[in-house]
Length: 150
Image 1 (tube, rainbow, N blue to C red):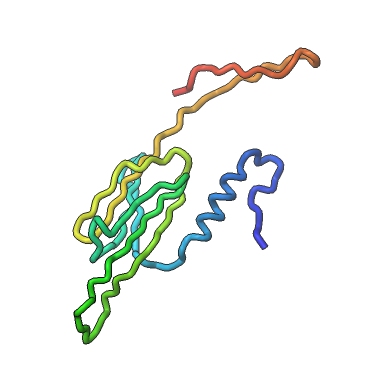
Image 2: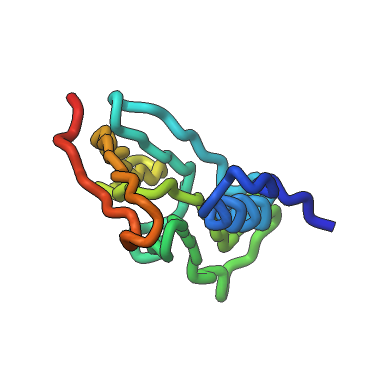
C-alpha cells in the first residue's frame, strides 16, 4: 500500500512530485558504486562516483525526463587468464538521480577513477501576478503580470 503525501485539496498540481518520489524510491538500494553529492557554489552541485576500472567507453550518462541515469558496463577481458583470486569484479551498474525541475547538467569528466557530473540549479525569478475580480456574468478572470521583483 502506497502512502500518498499530497492528498490535501490545498496541494494543487503536485502529483508530479509524488511521481518523482515514487521513482526515487524504486532506484537501486545497492551501494555500488559509491558516490558523493557536494554543493560547489550557491547554484552548483557535483555528483562524484567512484568508478575505478571503468574507461570513458564503459560509461554512459543520459537524462531521461527529470532523471539523470549513469550506467557502467565493463567488457569481460578474462578470456585466457587464470585467476588465483578474483576480488575485482567486472561489474555493471546503473545509478539514477531524480532531478528537480530546472536542474541542468553542465558537463561530466573522468579523472583518476572518479566520474564527476556538474549540475546547475538556476535561481527562479520571483513573479507577482494580480488577478482581477469581475462581477458575475462578465466572463473569466484575467491575469495581469507585474514586473518581477528583485
